[in-house]
Image (tube, rainbow, N blue to C red; front, top):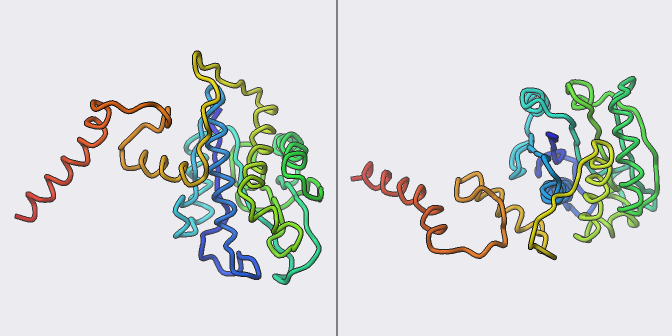
Length: 246
């Protein structure tokens, strides 16, 4: 099962922030990283991020959709947090969107949204339809979640709590697993292995991008050979750069 993910807007996208200037991307990014981590526990579940995982650029929507379509993803989840007028208030709640008339996307939303509400525990604002680009132009069932209102004095408590952001991810993952019939992996001889937190997941993804690791078994004991194998490609690149500078 191939699942494409994006963490909404870039970190510097105008307007996408709390009244205290906390960035929506920071909340979205943490939720997406937890989704990726949690889905690694399921058999044959693959993920791809189609946004800029550093948040520095706001990847064009067409580029996100094209990457998901070319990868032949089986589902698309765009993670967002909401806002009203940018001023603190008592409004709030969670919404899940799908494209109007898309039966498969509606069914996906109906699987994910109730689990998101039960896990994240904010007001249920329901499942809604919207003509959002990533919902309209993807070739697979697609949903967009609005977890909480960033300008709500009620919701901001949840957004500032990493355990609640993980709960937001857990609700989405449980909905995906139920919808697609994903099964948990059975790992012989491994019990109570800790889960990566958001900061650790960021390091894992950066290490994978640099070719240092395949990202598997993050808490495995490391022997000398593994270290040599991981550092050898980097050492070669450094040696090549030294030769060019001579």
